[in-house]
Image (cartoon, rainbow, N blue to C red; front, side, top):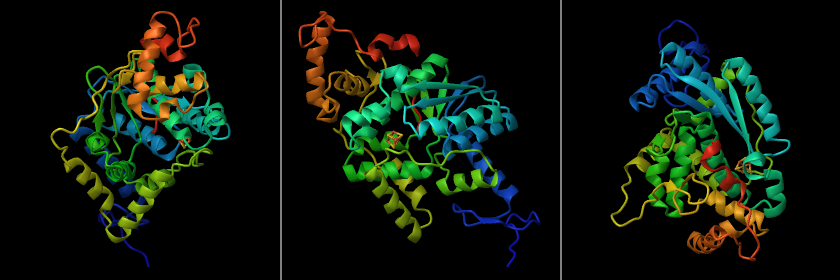
Length: 358
Ligand code: SF4
């Protein structure tokens, strides 16, 4: 049975919007999708005219659609932004090398310049080598921490004013659920914030905060965008997988579950006396950290010293131990009494220089 587009445009509907249930033609869906992102951007005042903005680009559907829509809205509404694609090469053979080829094509297709930062150049390690050392249990801890910092370092190097990431409504709702299930209420507020960062850091924002993952897939499909859809070969991420499956089950009985969970996360207030993580600067590498020594430096030290589990344990004990090591390093000796060469992060510091997720 042919159904007419609910907007009354006279065309036949080709899809049912997951977010509203409206039957729409392709053009009316594109328009609704783009206008909602525009509304999110303007309502939250994400940009100022003249801003230089790095789009965290992995070649996946979210960041590819984000790059396409950012360019389109920048031109349609004259935001006055200068855009750049910023990709992180984690060094995952058979995965990231292929997805980066997609980003390189996007660079040509959208006419947005591309900068690639690699773990190899920043940390002296690729994820392939890290997995060889740590196995497949904690690999995503290393990858996530390094990626986050690598994006910041890339953004600093490019001297951008802001970073945008392709995190969508489903990602945020899953993170809310994960934080609740872990009892990590202190992180709830930050994970639902549309903008994170402070005056000392480059602001990161999520223009897709209210955009459903299914609609991003539909948009990419109907626009025939060039994106990479293979999963990382090292992806276990079982915990997020459970949160995702739970959210999908909730959606079957309540279509608005994704937005409702985000809204709940925003409204949950933090009890008085609960210590919220405050962002400062790592005393070793000078990058953003909520601890005296940032997690990237802790993990890197463990890798370089052949003790890759060093950063996986209790953070207070690790910080204590690193504090002792750091004092020895400042006096020119490491724990074995030999002259210490600081790791790559410490050497590069601010001079050089965000990892996507994305
Ligand atoms: Fe890195 Fe993601 Fe692969 Fe984990 S699943 S190793 S975080 S790219």
